[in-house]
Image (cartoon, rainbow over all chains, first blue to last red):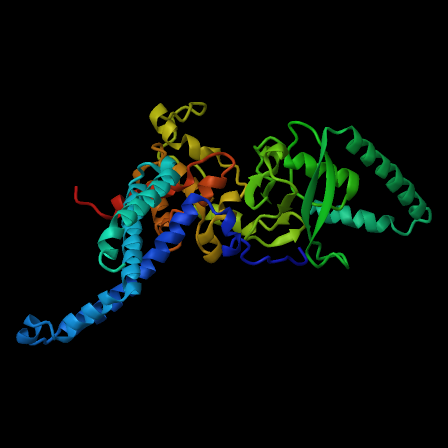
Length: 138
Length: 283
């Protein structure tokens, strides 16, 4: 063999239109996982404002923690981010359960159907949460 | 390699005097033949075929060639490639042998998916049909890829039957229970075509990963009860190493493309569970 040609990663994300269910499930699981890790840090940052709060100030809602939360909840974008967070968490949980079954060797022949089912369930749960998250904001 | 021989013969013929006129006559005759084929066919199909030849000046840059081929019901991608080679360009190179999905020579990347050329009906595909060599393997020429790495990974799992004890009589059968045979049945179908390995994203990123085909082969023997427990443990040690079964992230790409419908992911998952059982003993 004189030479050979390396075409590089032709199976890269440029071919996303041809991805099958299992591949999409993997991509979304990774993506939602990273988002949840990112959220965890912001969550800790917000919670840290509750450290060392004077109980008197907390009772009258003038402490940093309560004001931070109230300030965030007052922003419409935060309401939508919360909906996004719920969507991400619900999908990650449902697909995680699907993966548990895959690990146990159960339902591998319906792995695509179970992925679609987790997508549909995620959508339904997200939609039903809208009144709660947007209540009073719109 | 046969393809190189073919090329060399052509080059050797070059200096003969009447070569040009013969070639011209031939090509004209061939053109007529092709036109006749196309006119009589129920319809025509366009192939876009990946071309690359590192040994010929002007063909070193990868490109796509278009071939219009006559379509007949029941025609496969391999049939179309053979037509293109025989009628248009004899230097078009691809592997094929049995033409009935047994030899595993003609795994190709057809319309963005790994498929066996001889098992894929032209009528089932969107046109024009784009035919490329298997991804994630170096291209030697046109549609021929270097399979060495794939074969190395297959060898790494020691893919041969190694029974615990041999039957007493020389001609006696090596009996297996029907249940056990049923368990390994699908895994024995592998034809070493390499489609699964080529479709696997993990194998693409980790050159040391055994890959679906090799792990399936390991499953075939590890699950065979005629091999003793010690042999099974040795086999599990091979697949449970860092670049073994745990690299699989259950994308199911291999299972989707396997032309023999082997539930590869299922077998990989089964070996993961076996490895855990092998290492955790509470009972």
